[in-house]
Image (cartoon, rainbow over all chains, first blue to last red; front, side, top):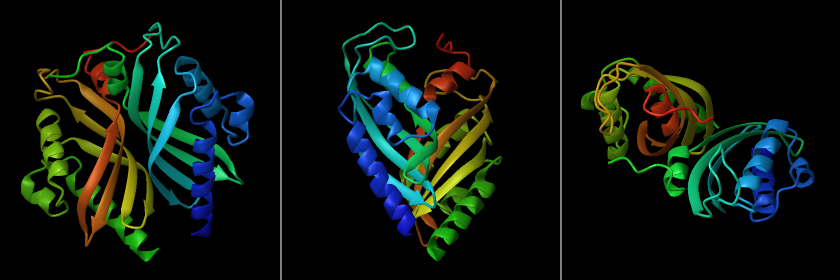
Length: 127
Length: 127
């Protein structure tokens, strides 16, 4: 139980540290020992510089944390061939972390990419 | 802790009961009092009859169980204006349940809708 509480505090600290600022590799690696997650964050921060994250719900069990959150940013960099639209986006995502000794050692991620594309004006909402 | 274990077992029973069979209201009412979730299942069942659900990971805390899973089905009914393609899909999703007295009373879910569209051949994968 205590471990789950510590892990929650760690994740809240981590999200607060990264939200709304430039996400350098050095900053990421203070919290992350999963290189694929660091690469994902650096990629996304290049597309949506200084993007913000808002926590909606945290569920913890053992070494694992599930975070339901929203990402807010402005599209200022190329995204999979889509040039910057300078549009604001706000979309939900869910991420699962495994935490050992105050480091994220693995993760999975699911985001509503359809909502992202709609907000960028690339795709129309379904009728 | 005991409650968490019971809730996980309940969710495993629920998945086993509705995966791969017709999901009628009587069956769903055995497990669910959240009308929005029932409506969502009816909608999806009409597009992907007898779809299967496979659990990949469960994280539980208090009344909540978060499940990372995959849905497998064949597109045999209209889906948001897309006529049946008879194609097989398999997509990851995350769903969270609030459980009280062996009933699901609330939920949220997130799925990659773009992956659905790609697998139906309605949309091309990003370059």
